[in-house]
Length: 118
Image (cartoon, rainbow, N blue to C red; front, side):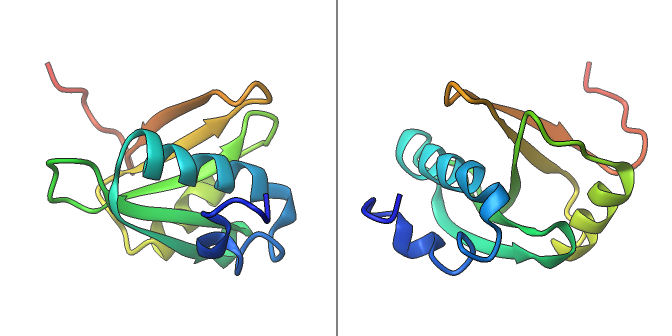
């Protein structure tokens, strides 16, 4: 991981949160290289003991927040509440669920009860 060009962007948080380092590394590279997000920045979520990502999808002006995590992790409502607060209460966040086979599934999470669009 340390030899990869993207490691410099993540080097402050990878040693600080080793349990979530793989998910952060994998998600960062997916967003930056495969999905071509712009203005991608790494954010320290101390309350959740991990790094998160903020950036823009191509042709989208809004800044989106992504929290990488592993499929094996247990998450709680309190954990999500803390994440929303630390990210500045965005309208929604994306959980990037990473699996052992390098797949990533993104789930859009909104605070409270939100009716899906028709």
